[in-house]
Length: 309
Length: 301
Image (tube, rainbow over all chains, first blue to last red; front, side, top):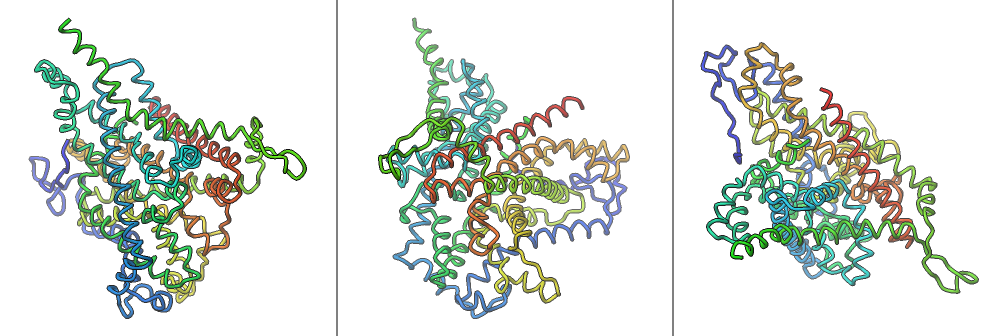
């Protein structure tokens, strides 16, 4: 499987294309008229406007003073003061914002890395070994994909508080280590891409199972692993319910929880409106850049999950 | 003997690989479910006058469930998310499929840009998306509401009849890009020869979409539909964030909000557990039912 399929602009057939403009891009079958091109482009532009408008609003709003946030036209600049807003965001309350950002990075980074490794190990084992209980395990994991995470968070909180784990880093990290969907993807990917002969050959050469996994399997599964890591990272970063339920100490908050705590105090302290908006902008921009830059990696694994159906 | 030792190690290897995940899966999935079920059939009872004789936990069988199911606010919240799902799931899937097909169509230019633009909101956490759209819904702050008022259209995006659909808009905005990416990826796996064959057969663009592309999209459409159903029933952050600006959202607006409120405001963990179990069951039955329905139909075709 390729990471990215380049758009094909070369005519696929050997004959002369009879279409109006002479090109037959991928997916194109009939002649492309100017009218249909204008229609398609128009619809795509309208959709892009819809998806980008709130982001644009956020960018503009993050440059405004609290007064202008409410008193000026939302879609245009008014007395831009982005740097002083930024300074305010990162220094407010002993730089708690930076701490939230670091917490988010810790939760999402460590959580996603461990989840990916565990998913790779079990997906590989479920795909490449036959052992009793294999199908049972796989079906239970599949059931896990269908259970809404928020239904689990409450009882998990009760269990964790009994074990003294609530309101600690572990309360958010431990559940983040588990990705049933990751196991599902890894199993399908490993089954399709790791040849049994390769494993047999390695065994005959005297390699141990752990070595075969780390040297052979992990390398072949890398595209799937990148996808799972990204999924899990964004999932943890965006998660709100679990940290909300688990954490009471604001020093442990991830950025999502921190920003809503600012927002909830804003009617008493109007300055916090601007901090919420500015903080949201600062937190969202790096992720958006990463999102766009890493898009091709996402796509590589996305369809694996849907082959079964 | 020499050959037996490695063989035995090989038999243990798969278990060693699966064990760490399974252990954590039990901790984070099986145990909480079991505990929620246990909590949901228990309750705290107080003895003595005014309950001063102390409290103890007793088995109450399905009483918490019957309490939950006879609580009008909770029932309304369930009805609300089901109505939400009935509208949101088809709209989301249709919009995503439509935009994916447009991106894949022969007439599309700037595909990279559009794909990136559509996918961008997926990186915005749900609470932040809700904070954002919240500003865009409040009259006086929102350029949209003010702009519409200038055109003579006055809508209250946070009113009782509309706020559910304002939330639907936030959810669509967040996740459509992800679904589009899944569907576009699936379309890319279609071999070019198939389109060639359709072209030679004289199929129109619409016929190709209907008879070639949509059937090929089926597995990806099923996947996105199931995920949308599960996601929809979990509605929590969006109504919670909009609550301060909309008087139509109460503390039992969605089942999740209701369970959260029972647990952390009313200290009624047992009722909250029953509500959480009901929510998980509903999600499971709907997703599973949808998969069964689709597979049965697929088998006949």
